[in-house]
Image (cartoon, rainbow, N blue to C red; front, top):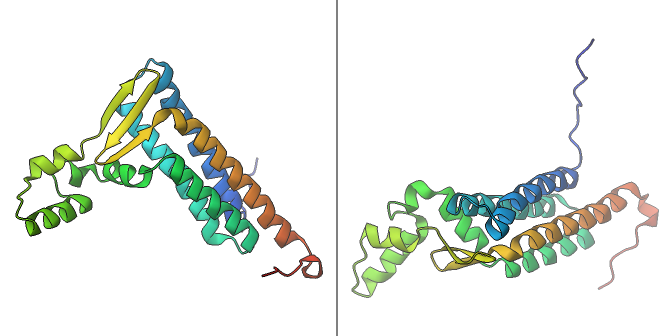
Length: 193
């Protein structure tokens, strides 16, 4: 048997983004389900959920960067904005999780800015105080958990629907994009102002 022949070309970027969004949406479902319905490992599930949700967001922005169809790009840009409203502070909270090696010592980028602002107001914040402010926490009730990091709180009950919804918007934007690239140029109508 011969090994499978390796393709010389990548699939379209929007297709790659869609497949990544699907994987990360599925990855978000497991810790969200455990956090909401149990049994959960608590904070480890919360951290995994944040990373998975952020990667659904990243897949959407990846697709946007590579889209040439203005309608597809706008459709997905609007969807990302709505996703960010549904899960405010997600990107910033995930940054703290991802850069735990800095934030647990009080030296993360946001903490450095807080320290500079505090010093300019005559306040001295210790590394321990800054680390405590950005320590991940899981709170709320069993059926309505919240993940808090710094000033950001992510409502876990919104996570599965938000991720699935954004996955659907990536899919529809990819369809719009692929229709543009598969149609002959004479069939593409100019955008109206």
